[in-house]
Amino acid sequence: MAMRQGAMEAVEARGIGDALRAMAERDGSNAHRYVHGEELNSGPFAARNLADAAHYLCLLHGRHPGVVDFAAEKTAEPEARKWLEQAIDGFSRERIFIGNLTVAAGPQPSTVGHTESEQAVLAQRHAIETLAQSERKGCALGAAAALVIDWREIRSVLNAAADKLSVEAPGCQL
Image 1 (tube, rainbow, N blue to C red):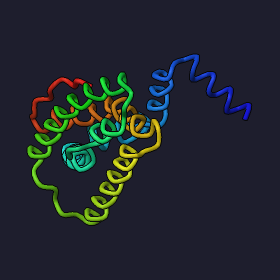
Image 2 (cartoon, rainbow, N blue to C red):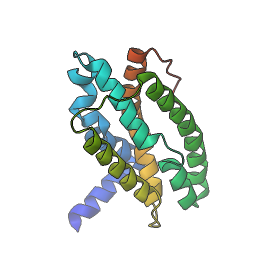
Image 3 (cartoon, rainbow, N blue to C red):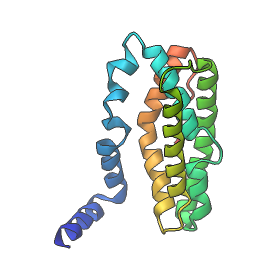
């Protein structure tokens, strides 16, 4: 209990926003080697890998309603609702961008493991949508906040895909 109390005091001292950003930096997309690795950014298959990333990110976050929309339905606090409304607007633009990238990438080639990969992404989408629709206080808002904070790194992958696919990347408004 003393360890948990100390951790909570550290979070309160730094601020919840700083704590969330630190968790995203440590455990989010930025921490994944693929985001900054050669396979995605400069290797011989970078263009195909970026196209695949756009497809899978579209499967994960391109559908409406999404995580932020679901969270807004479950959040009653006025300040949080105001933030969520801004995030909803920003994500509607991100969905358009993801859709444009997916169209520019064209159909995914049928490869060994494609169906299993797609099913894994759909299961992930279901899991995060479940969190975003949770009745537990703060769970839905936390899912939305985590996604928005992590989106900067996700957006870097989308921007790289846009460069390879000659799609104009609009400014991110999250």
